[in-house]
Length: 74
Image (cartoon, rainbow, N blue to C red; front, side, top):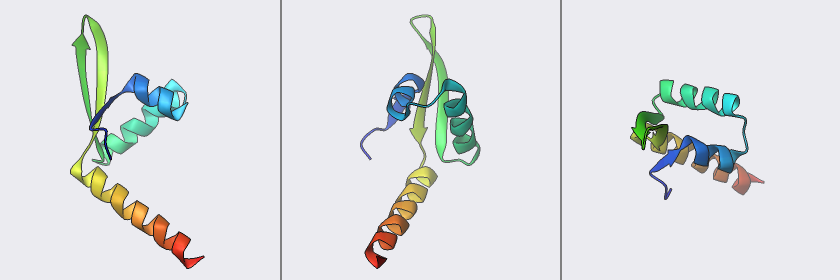
């Protein structure tokens, strides 16, 4: 992974999700300890940054390994 922190707006653009759906999914990831959420003001505008935790990285790596192993078995 190359991105350490991402804004809500950037995630909306990348995922093409609705604001509501993305918000719910990010909340679930945060509650599971897979991402951190940081809210702050930048030039008087509310901004939210998201970053992956060590647990999130480890979980993603394990998921990726399982996905690759399924492709190899074909």
